[in-house]
Image (cartoon, rainbow, N blue to C red; front, side, top):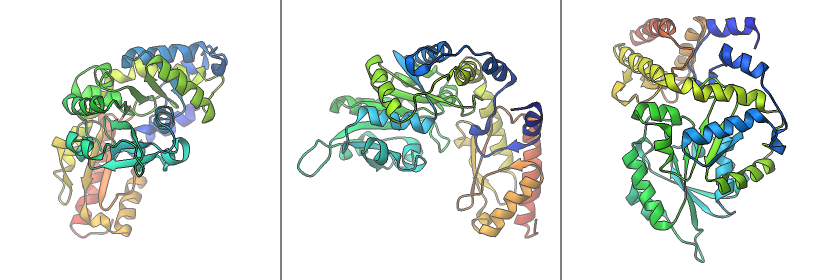
Length: 360
């Protein structure tokens, strides 16, 4: 990104997601000067360094660099499961809701979602769904968790332990969609490896809130990762001079993971102050990470929803359209206190007008 692009980025306040976090100046310099090789041959020293660092941070034996979080999750399913197997996971998890049905296309597995309030899989519900193969039923081969959850909640270590116990009873592996693993760690005030210790494989993103432009890591035991590396090639994820990307990922893991609590703090402040605006319903006590969900019932109307999005856009604030009147604002590295104040000013003006019946 050029200097002019960077300036435009700084002026625009983007609340749609923490995936919009462009690289820092330090990342740009590291990418420009990265030592590279051919990663398919295992010759890229910067990728090798990133994979080693990712394994150490997650407490796993090895890790493999992949293009995206969806790629990493689907690679895990593809590696753990045989075609026709069944995967148990929460009904609102990212793998079910936001990965375009890839499990059926790539791994050829059947996903069996269960009710999981706030991302928590209950042992009783799990036991009712797990099954052995017979004449009519596929075999359960994997349980998937998500922490932090894309609904903005964090799953406790105790709840993860409960799932682990059921998985051990059945001799099943557990995969963790840890796209926001480090947000979960910051919220729970533990090291990321303490969360990852409860599962057999873990995917974590370098581009969600950590400012790396591209990439995720899939980590686990060495034999699992080597099998995954082969299947990464099948999926088209064998990249060549990928050290240019990995250089930013190294900085993401070493530096950006340490500051996520700042984003969480701003999200809590945002939720609290939005909740004082007439017509808005929010629950600051449910803000675990950097996501604020709030409802404004009139925005169930498509025209009102579009008007709100357009109102913010005219003030150089980008937001996603609401889902049935529910908005999500995400804080991240490029949302500081000044930006937050501008968001709150715009919110107060827009929602108070609409609450009073005044057009925007």
